[in-house]
Amino acid sequence: MIQEAITNYKLQHTITTLSPLKAILFDMDGVIFDSMPYHALSWVNAFKQVGITFSEYEVYLNEGRTGASTIHNEFLSQKHRQASDAEIKELYALKSQHFEACGKPIAMNYATETLDRVKHLGLDIFLVTGSGQVSLLNTLNTYFPAVFSKQNMVTAYDVTHGKPHPEPYLIALEKGNLQAQQAFVVENAPLGIQAAVAANIFTVAINTGILEDKVLLEAGANIVVPSLADFYHLLPSLVENWK
Ligand code: CA
Image 1 (cartoon, protein in one colour):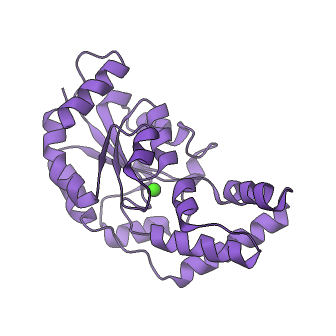
Image 2 (cartoon, rainbow, N blue to C red; image 1 turned 180 degrees about the vertical axis):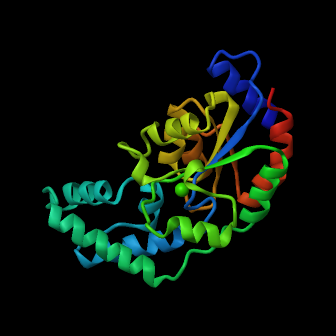
C-alpha cells in the first residue's frame, strides 16, 4: 500500500527519486487532540439556537474552515441572506462557550508515542492548524512537553488564507526550509487534505471522524488509515520507503 502510494505521488509530480525525508507536518484537531466530537456537538447546538440545522456530519465536512466562513455559508443557504458581523460574532461566541463547557480536549490515543517515534527517527515536527485558540501553546506544552514552540507551529495568526488554501502548509515548508517532497502531512479533514495536496505535499489521512474513507481519498489523500495508532505502526515503513 505504501510503496504504491509513494510511486503514485512521484508519478503525479514527475519525480524519479524523493529527497530525504526531513519533517512531518501534523494537523491538530482530530489528529493530535481528540477534540472533534466536542467541536461537532458545539456547532450543532450553537446553530440550533439560531434556528439553523447543522448536522455532525456537516461539521466534519467543514472542519478546517474558519468559524466566520461556516456561519456565513449556513446563513446564505438556510436563511437566504448574509449574516451580519454582529451575528457572526455572537454565534461564534456561543459555539466557543459550548466548546469550553466540554472541558479540556484530550490527547488523541497514540499522540505521545507517535511524536516520540518521529523524534527518534530524527525527523522534525511541525504543527499546522487553523485554530486561533489563545491558550493553544500552553495546552500543547502540558500534554506534549518540549515538542512544540512558536518556531515549529503555524496557527490562525500566521496566515491570510485558511485551509483549504495551501498557505498554512506552504508557510510550514518555508519555516522548516523544506521542499514539498522532504516532508509529509498527517491530516484528518477533507479541507485540510486539500490544503496539503495543493501545497504538493504527500498526505496521510487518518480517519478519526465519521466521514467515509472515500471522502478523504477524493480530497486527494495519498493514503488513508483508520487511526493514529495505525499511523504509528505504519511510520517506520513509510520512512523506509521514502526514496
Ligand atoms: Ca483536523
